[in-house]
Length: 98
Image (cartoon, rainbow, N blue to C red):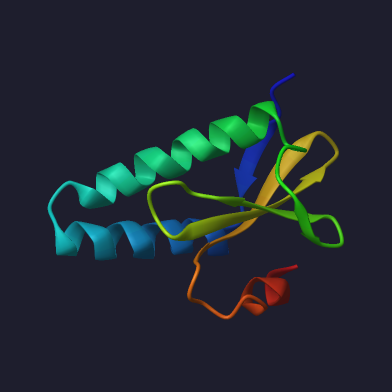
């Protein structure tokens, strides 16, 4: 069963900021980043328990090609994405969003 995926506004901003930065580095790279994240969100929607819990009921899925993690929770058959953060960021930064 595929779950619905909802991004919090902060997570949408994370994606926008990262895609903009990658696009400035190399034209087309921002779109490739978004494609990777969309593929990961699709995988999460299909198999939300695949990725490890890192804190209480929050899980993290690591993007393969880019150094980002998708932080999410499953609530009432919905995947709620809390953050999409670069691996070098403070690992506790996403917790203030919960």
